[in-house]
Structure formats: C-alpha cells, structure tokens
Amino acid sequence: MRRSALTLAATLALTACSGGVGATVAPASEAPLPTSTTLAAKSAESSDSSQAAPTFDTVPGTPPAAFDSFHATIDVSMQFDGTALEVTGEGVWDNGSFDCSVESGVGGFGFTQAIIATPETLWFDAGNGYEESGLFAMGVQEAMATCPTSPLFWADFGTEDAGTITGEETVRNGRPTVKTDITKLMGVGGLGLVQGFEGATVNEMVMWVDVETNTAVAVLADVELSAELLASQSGDDLGTGSMKMVMEFGVDQINDSSLSVTTP
Image (cartoon, rainbow, N blue to C red):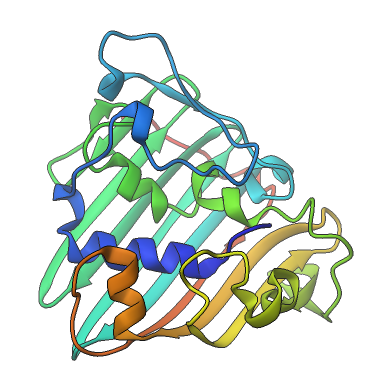
C-alpha cells in the first residue's frame, strides 16, 4: 500500500469544486489511472476510446480480488470556508461485475452519479438515466473514484505488500479483523509516501484488515488540510480556510450469494 485515504479525499474535494459530472476527463493516454499498483485498466479495441468497454485487473489484498461478492458503502464529510460537502454512496460487487450510486452535495447543489459495469460493458448514469459508456467518457473516472465497489477505487489499499499487520483484534460485520493505524504503515506522519500531502494534520487514519484473507475491508480517515496545501494540490485557490475531512468506507455482506448486479 503506497498511498492513503487522503488521496481519495483530495480527489473528492477537487471533483466537487470543479463541477462534478461536468469536469474534463483526460484522454486515454493521459488518464490519471493508478500507477502505484499492478492494476491495469484496459480498453477493448475501438476507434473511439471514450466508448471502449473496460475490463479491470483486481489488485491482490483488496476486496474485489479476495471476495466473490460484497456490499460496500462510502460516507464523506468535508468542510471548508463555511461550505459543507457530503458524499454518500453504496453498491454491490459480484464476481467481476459491480454497480454503485454516489450522491454528492455542496453549497446547496447536489447531483447523483451511478455506474453498472460487467467485464464486457459499462453503463453510466450522470442524472438522466443509464447509457452505455466507456472508461474515458466524460464523468466516468470521477464517478469511479468514489465508487466503493470499483477495483479502481480499492487499488491503492492493497495489503499484499504491507508486511505483518498488527493492531487491535476486533470483529467487523461478523468477521475477525485487525484494526491498525495506517500512519504506521505509511511512514512518519502517515503521509511520507503521498507526494504533496506531507503537511496535512492526521487526526485519525485507521484500517480494518480481514484476518482470514489479510484484506483491507474498511478505512476511516479524519484529516485537516491547510489552505496553502489545498492550493498547491489543485493549482487554484479553493478558499481562504483549511479543510476538515472525515471519511469512512468499507464492505459488508462478504460472499453473500444473494447479492447480484442487474444490468439495464
């Protein structure tokens, strides 16, 4: 694991401030896919990469690789300059297919995005109903960044190379887990390997790791970023104050045979 929940939180903040579904998506050759893992997002041959159907390699030590099926949720709260951003979402993973719906609200404006993906086809709903889409179509990557059932979402939270994980033994959603301080896994301050975020204040950053599979099944992050740090990451002045972020995401109903993904 080479990055942290803070990276995801920053993505959420910058996506919301840039207008969510209206944000510009880089072309395939420049798309900001994870580079710190073995994840590969591959498009089927097509003359139009924005409509190419994606297939995804799952990363060892993450729920999509370890479990046949699961239900997942995400809950994020951010506050900056007196403005509150809320992001909530949930979905299902089922043997290589996944769905999710994520609702975001900021400054009195709200929108919902949804994805349904199989190994062959992806459908995206930007608010007007599902339409067949591709990995690089406008809005898809932003939606997948907050989709807690997507292999892309979990790619940076693989535990395979984390070594021996120690912490508090507990039970989460009926499964034995180890609650561990991510900052200890990440280095001094928990942010030594996250370029540009070394100045953030980490109030709490913990991960629950499933004992049976040595897989991350939940993450909780409570962090604060200064105005200067936010500006350095976005290239823009997002405001004059700091940002407070509390984020929790995780999986439950692991290997529940009743879970399924229904295509449009």
